[in-house]
Length: 495
Image 1 (cartoon, rainbow, N blue to C red):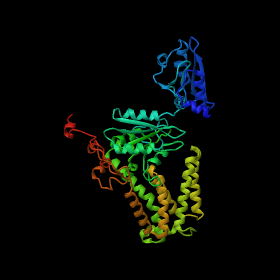
Image 2: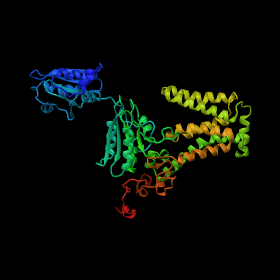
Image 3: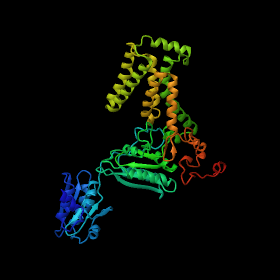
Image 4: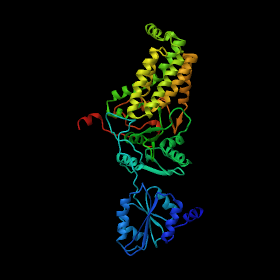
C-alpha cells in the first residue's frame, strides 16, 4: 500500500497497466471498476469509474464508442477532439484521478499517453425539487432545496441572474470531501463577513460533514448557546431574499437546509407568506406569533406560581373553577406541570419517528385516551392539561424556535415552582441579559430593537408596504444601501 501511495504522488507514465495499477492502489474497493476497450487500430484504453455514481451509458456512448471507431490518438488533446463530452479535465497524477473518480467522474486512460482525461459523467440519485415539509405556504413559491448542491446552486442562480452572485466552493471533511459553497452578492455584502465565514469554514478539520448542521456549529460564535446563532431555511426564495439584504449564505452538499449569516431572532417570527399578503395581515400574523411564544413560555409558569404563591393573580371566578378541578390531585402544581410537559415531549418525539399512520393513531391515544383517563383517575387536573396543550400548540407557531422554547419552558416551570413570580422575573432578566449581549458577525441577536434601529422596524415584527422598503437593513451595514428606486406614487398611478 505504501508503494501505491508513493507511486500516486508521482505523475502518470505512458504505460496503461501501470497507470491503472496506480489508481487501484489508492482505490482498492470492489465498486471501483475498470472498463477496458481498444481503438480501431488496437491501442488499449481503460476507463476507471466508481459503480453507482457514474452514468455508464454516457461513458459507453460518448467515450468508448468514438474511440473504438477511430485510430489511436497520440496526445490528450487529440483524444479530447474525439470525445463528445462538454466537461473534460486533465488529471496528471493518480491521486487527482482518484479524487475525481470518487466524485463520480471516470478517468480515461490510453496506452502511450501520459496522464488521464476526466469525463463529466457523474450520476447521483437525487429526489425531485418539492415543497419542504417545514415551510409549507398557501401563497408563494413552493420549491425547496434538496440534497444535491449543484441543483441548489441552480435554484439560486435562476433567481439571481447577475454577475455579482458569487458561489465560492471548498471541500470540507477528510474522508467525506463534502462541497461547501459560500454564497453572497459582491458589492452588497460586507467583505469582512465573507472573509470571516470563509476563514471559519477553511479552519474546519473533521472526518466528515453529513449535514449543514455540522457547519452551523463551526460558524456559531457561541456554539454551546441555547439559542440559534445561524439562520436556516429550506426555500430558495427566502435564501435569495436574505442575500439581497446583504447576508452571506452557505450551501452544503447532502443537506437541503441552507445557512444564512448574520442571524437575528426576529427572522424566526417572519414567514415567506408574509410577503404575498397585505402588510396589515402580515403584521398581525407576526404579532400573533410573538404572543404565542409568550403564551408557550409563561402560561405554565404563571399557573404554577399562582397556585403555590399568588392566588391573587387569578380572577375569583377562574380561581373557583380551578380549585374545583384540582381537588384530590396527589402531585404538587409544579410536579404536575413538569410531568405533563414531559409526556407532551415524549408524544412529540414518538410521533415524529413513527410511521405516518401509526403516528396518527399514537396522537389520538395520547391526546384522548391517556389525557381523559388520567383526569378521571385523579392523577392530573383538567386545567393543567388545557394549559399544557395550549402551550404546546402555541410553541409550534414558530417552528424554528420550538426546541429552544421546550427547554426554556421547563426552566420557567422549575423557577416558578421554587420561588414563584420572583423566579419568573429573575429567569426572564437572565435570558434578556444573555440575548442583549449576543452579537454574531456584527449584528446583535435582538436587532433592530436592541440596539434601537427604527428604520429596520419596517420589516421585523412589523411589515410595511413595498414602498417603505427602499433601503437594506441598516444593522447589516452593507456597501449598497439602496434596494428600491421608484418614482412618486402619483406618477406610478398615471402610468
